[in-house]
Image 1 (cartoon, rainbow, N blue to C red):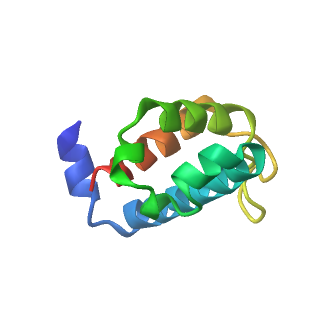
Image 2 (cartoon, one colour):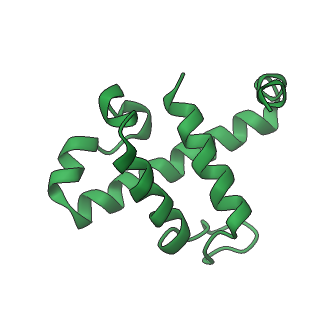
Length: 103
């Protein structure tokens, strides 16, 4: 719930998770820019710089969900590197990125 999110906000692991989420968001935007120049121009290349009106639109999160489920590979140096996320991890990253846009 909201309390878990708030209490986790100061922990090192939470900060590390959010940093990782932002990196995934950036890689998503790079991928989108390569696939669709119009969306790339609209959304940019840095997750934390996505314009508020874009971050509030449903389509960016629909594309993000598909990217997390079907395209993004776990970075080298991590457990399960090169594999797709499992459902719970994809969901956590997706939720983290939504949370990040609402700051």
